Image (cartoon, rainbow, N blue to C red; front, side, top):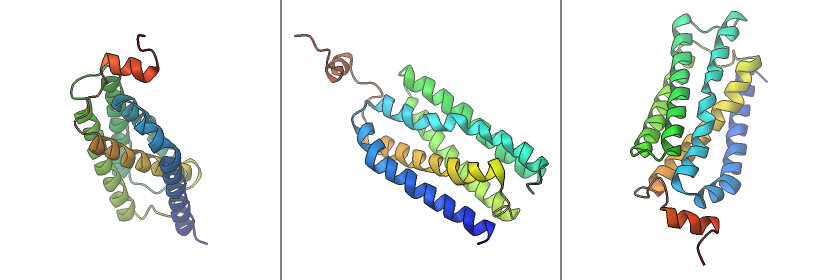
Length: 179
């Protein structure tokens, strides 16, 4: 089996595994949470997109990405990581517009993913990943894609729901209602 086929199979398997976990465990849990909590949990994996910095060592070790492609990849992911952290802060502090910031993260992540795939095709990078790059592409990227799908589901299905439940509704949900 070639490296390109093996990588494709690992990505597909990771998508199936993460999709199953999402369907069986994460989605039911999200449905029981207030909107801000649900979105925050889904955004956290994106904070770690700074792992893209490993591409510098991968390039040094022979990963055939161009300097321009490397710059686009790293800066796109660093911007995504920073935006994810800003989104989490906005959700945590119940800032008006936090849902819009979350949509911005979804759109920029989708754009960044399409850009990286396009660049990978253009530079013939598929099948060239090894080591940490292999793990990022086969494990972490599918996790981010499932996270984005769940985030879109939460944003769409809970449209109009406030980012934070009212104080009294939160108390009832926590079992601390006054007798």
